[in-house]
Image 1 (cartoon, rainbow, N blue to C red):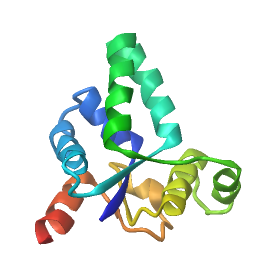
Image 2 (image 1 turned 135 degrees about the vertical axis):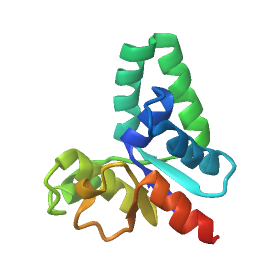
Image 3 (image 1 turned 120 degrees about the vertical axis):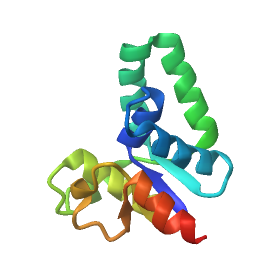
Image 4 (image 1 turned 90 degrees about the horizontal axis):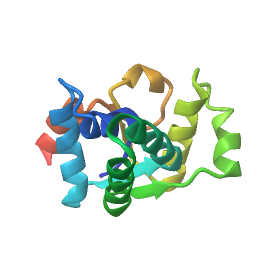
Length: 139
């Protein structure tokens, strides 16, 4: 399955945010082992770079981005995605951009800790735990 991974899931791993880090790390491991095709929205990388450099320092922040670029495919954000995101009905434009980029990249599900932010999604939306139990557990 191809999954679009939300920014909060990546930050859980990088910043070791408990109690979420373990399940989020398992999602990342699935992508790294190529058991799932993982996508990150292009804007996720800029947000992560900013927050990681601010929290863990410039060098570790840049290294984190390099690692993510090796593991994940990137869902592009261009004029078409930004325009389409205006019409999804999502309350938050940032979530709408992430969703629209994922759809255009061919993702078949979204992994996020904020499932409610993606109300109206035509893609299935899972928390890391739900994905691991309900989807991966069945494969």
